[in-house]
Length: 107
Ligand code: HEC
Image 1 (tube, helix red, strand yellow):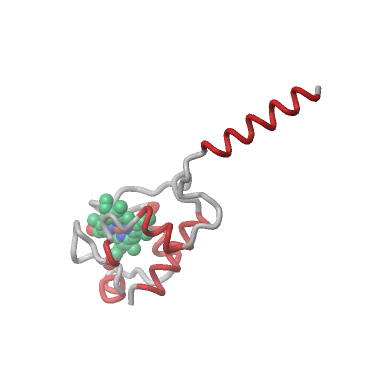
Image 2 (cartoon, rainbow, N blue to C red):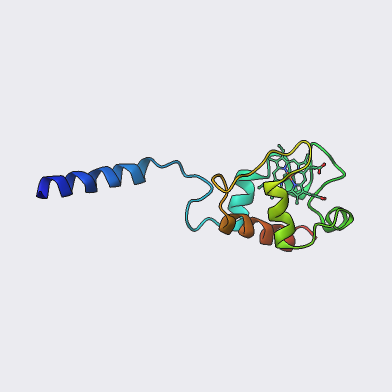
């Protein structure tokens, strides 16, 4: 019995250690999550693929992207050139952190 408990504790620890430091890692800031998931295309809040769709307020407002939920919606249902971020890749909690970071950073 004791060995089994130890063994499962060991495996749990191994699992924890080898989990990829994915987007769902606890405690990542909105900024860190943005840099990990979005900044390849949205360098400094820009857009290297379609420059009309930057994350700056001027462009966002033209496209009706105003709230945290608007941004999360785009992550789940993006336009051409941006890939989908599923809940598995970026859970709602992290998606909202990213959205809040965008709203306060790119004005
Ligand atoms: C592979 C490149 C790529 C990545 C990675 C990417 N995007 Fe985008 N994003 C785009 C493109 C291209 C568009 C324009 C899509 C369109 O035409 O509707 C866009 C549009 C947007 C818009 C709308 C901007 C506007 O002015 O209307 C938001 C908001 C956005 N992306 C957020 C994100 C977030 C948040 C992430 C990370 C979780 C992300 N994007 C990752 C390419 C990318």
